[in-house]
Amino acid sequence: MSVVEKEKNNYKEEKIVTALSKKLNKKVNIQRKKRLWVSIEPKEIVDACSIAYDMGFEHLSTISVTDWIEKNNFEIAYHLWSYKEKMLLTIKARINRENPTISSVTSLWSKNAELCERECHEFYGVIFKGNINLTPLMLEDWDGPPPFRKDFDWRKYVQQEYYNESNPREDNYFEVKK
Image 1 (cartoon, rainbow, N blue to C red):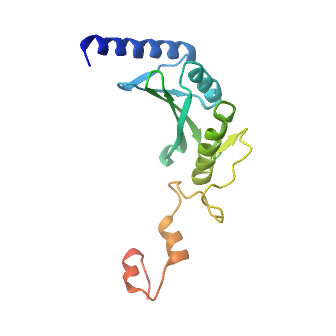
Image 2 (image 1 turned 45 degrees about the vertical axis):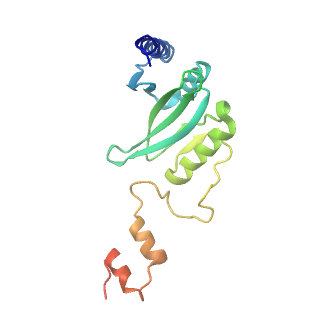
Image 3 (image 1 turned 90 degrees about the vertical axis):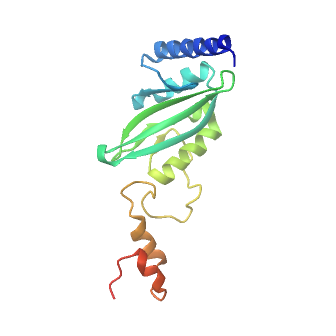
């Protein structure tokens, strides 16, 4: 890539950052080349995603959840892709772990958002207001707590559900009282 092309790309990036910052009324950060992120309040998620969509971030790549157990919140990250600019925008919002609720973005990305939100609901217990289908994707017969939360004791679960006392090799994985 020539110096002129690099300057052109940097100009485009700065132009998008400036426009997004102005429309969202938030500081948009450049993580690295063609990777932007912004933190917003949970109540702003639909508006922020709508603004990003209108600016060319038309593809919802995924929604991810980070469990900040020590801060008693989840960080929900919406990863949006612009095919035209070949740029990724991540919109982040923090919600309380005790009442993990945020508005759905299915009005913008319908089926794709529905699937991403179902997965986050299934593994973390996040409730997406407005998503009428939060049925399990993979854990159909699961009746335990959301298994990706940091307070889920997976060792205890595996020991209760799958531990085989007659196999001494498994004793190394669990504190077994004999």
